[in-house]
Length: 217
Ligand code: G3P
Image (cartoon, rainbow, N blue to C red; front, side, top):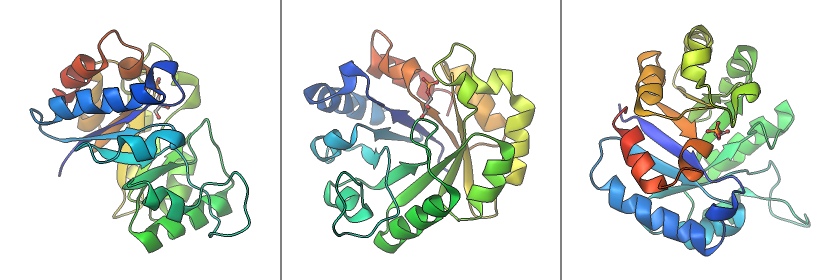
């Protein structure tokens, strides 16, 4: 099974606009040398410009609506049209209600878009993985953006999240991931990858940091 690192660019200033494309191109150089998969989730306004550089692109959000008279909404067809391969859904910083999560997963499935549904608790892992996304990502919100990796702070919770994940859905984890050791520990606990934001995007050399972290895949 291929393990993966999903790099969430969030809305970090050094990962917006032209900088997002520069970062993805620098990652594609790293990508040639590593085992495993690298996926990038840039700002929604940058999915179009970052696709087609040899790195899989996900949207940071997609909603449940079908195309129509909706202002300011992200529909699956628009994500697909940017060249993105999938989307994060229900990230801690972009929460949705349970019905919308289920509908967004279905909409993506209709179009062949991959889905990563984010969950804050083991109970949410159990509920949301039943909607059969491709991945469920366990991310305790209190650890996001911090210096303590979820794999160090909550190893037992990660194990429980893996055990609570519906059959056929792969478990990821994220929050505070900063090193190859954090990555390999997450995989030892049963995850098939991690989500990382600040540890890579806010580092002095994101491509170099990514390459080092990939040693843990
Ligand atoms: O999507 C992953 C993100 O929420 C984790 O953030 O900065 O703790 O790696 P960070």
